Length: 400
Image (tube, rainbow, N blue to C red; front, side):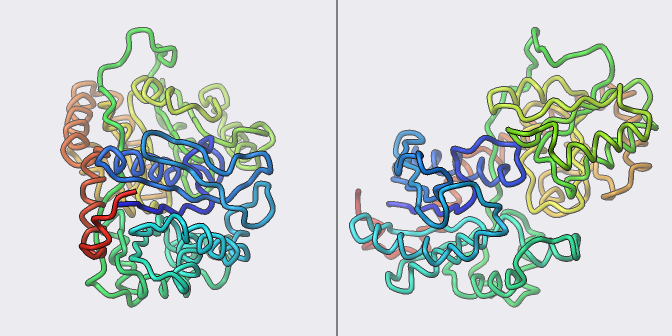
């Protein structure tokens, strides 16, 4: 099949760590490459955000990233992109006249808008992955939610009109069914993760002599890094490493400034290190250096970092929310804690840091779980199965 992946704000070529560059970027890139390894041709369509960016760039064998000229050729916050999705869809319609896909897979709700706009004039089988739902975001963020007012209504319409909705977690299916989405189009296919070997390198530059807690990911308030900082006050003889943040302007970033202030006010500035964004190649070494990886968001549609930690054989302490309820098995591959509860988090961290054997057992079980259920080849096979359900036998046999 020729597969069209639409990822309007999350380019698979982006540097990770900024407010709008995280798990979706990794998901789109890795899924596309894994599908190509299964013999498919994948085009990833993302919005051009710089005038000098080439229209087409090769991501890997069988995968091309195509920059769509929709809106100004500069970075725009994802919550401000909706007015440009019609232009995005119009461009797809013209481009697809000579490069028609067999199936369209939209990632995030605004990609769904662009896809639906294009498919009004060119009906094509469509799959939708939301990655996050506006109804959940609004519930947790209230007036601080910067999403457009119409987001929830649009997501409901997309769920009703897509041939398949590929949710990444069972919690997301429950949310969509509550919005009125038809159960017959629902499929659960989790995000995947690279199968990092769990053995730490002997020369890891991240290792220190103290207990080490790691928080890795985008630095946005809902990720709950301040909960980990607050818990650290009751976890003596441990350090916290915070990795992530924007690739430019790190020291002036509002969330970085806020978190540094939280650490200073708690008297923990000397025990909390903000190391900024790191490259994908550095992720395994950083994860292996940790005694415990803490992932404590208020809510989380899926969450790649816990899986990456499990792949590296590290124990995870995770909020009992969203996709983390699926991936982290409480007491087996990690521990669940309530969100925004630093007291309970501190208790669990102290217990794990005091028990190396328990940490090793949790890490080993997590690694085995990743290999069994969350590698990208497994995820790609399941995603392909959904595509084949919605693509006719005639079109699915087309090559090129």
